[in-house]
Amino acid sequence: MRFSSLSQWLQWQENLHFTEIDPGLDRVGKVWQRMGGSSTLPFKVVTIAGTNGKGSSVAITASILQAAGYRTATYTSPHLLRYNERISIDGEACSDDAICDAFERIDQARDDISLTYFEFATLAAVDLFSRQNVEIAVLEVGMGGRLDAVNLFDTDVALITPIGLDHMAWLGDNRETIGREKAGIIRAHSPVVCAENAPPESVLNYAESLSATCFVAGNDFDYTKNQSTWSWQNNDKKHDDLPMPALTGAYQLQNAAAVLQVCELLSLQGITINEQAVREGLQSVKLSGRFQLIPGAVTRILDVTHNQQGADNLRNLLVETAGQGKTYAVLAMLKDKDTHAVANALNGVIDFWYLAGLEGNRGLSAEDLSERLAPIVGDKKVGCYHYVSDAYEAAMASASASDRILIFGSFHTVEAAMRLMPELTQPVSVAS
Image 1 (cartoon, rainbow, N blue to C red):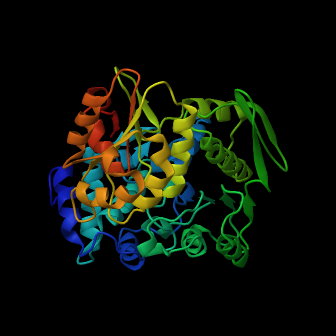
Image 2 (image 1 turned 135 degrees about the horizontal axis):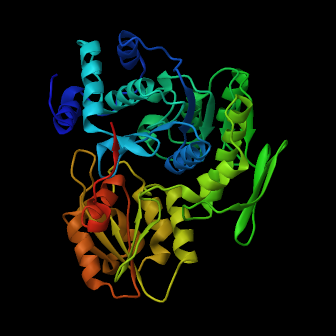
């Protein structure tokens, strides 16, 4: 074996390929073929693409399928505290040894073919799922769709979550162009669910070109929010008085409604999901970093939001949950994110901004972030710190018991803050 530890493998992968992002399926496809694989996997596949709500949709889908008794795998990215979070079976992260063994098989098969960090992860996940006899896998697309490594594999049901402006350097600068990239996960004659009421026409047109039946929110399925429950229905079925998803935010109903349509389509393909499984799945779903409340002397909120659509949702949540105290923000972002849109969306609900830098080629320094935000939030509401840890500690020192601190802007930002919270850094269970 090339390396004996997961950390060694990952460090090597970070520098193996000439660029961090290299869209395309040729290289990763050749390696998978050499491993004896094909585009059709030996288990059911739900593929989820979009801009916002992917992680939540994966979590809700998997929770319901597990409650229905199926051996369910999930592949997600990025991770927060441990790489193993990306590759999970029945809610348990795969072990270091299992992942290292998969990396070795990939390394032996690839020969001189260069792979990115993400491509290694994608192949490792599918290789492990195939060997662990899972019954259904929920695969989250990384950045786009059409050229994303996850799209190497055929899907039984595709789900496209709300599409916004993100990764524009790679995917395009408008929703129609981005939508066409996301729509690449659709397969001929296979169903696709659109979580938003008005998806880009490019998505609908591409589905039609493949004779793929498209199920659009508000048209083919819909939901109604009641006081403490919600109802869902499509043309054939109805669920009344459902429990709210155990993920905070009214927008989670949009995600959950689309997931229920996915479940109905899976039912037509032989996957048995009764209403009890739906209820249990909604109530037991867990996902870190999505308006995650950390109680204590000062309430802290962790959120990976980093674009305008997510920031709008976040603002609404902050308004809905506002108390008597102040709201402080610890913010650190990547260079390619729309910092102006995020600041515009949230400035009205933030009393003071603690800005921090992120390391790496894509990281934005606190000073550069401050320059971008100053015209919107003003100089008097901003403090700059080199590291997220410094910004977090400064915010905690300023806050009183009735205040709250929002830590957001990137998975990297949330990860750095989580590592300062002992209650969140306990070892997670792993599957061999």
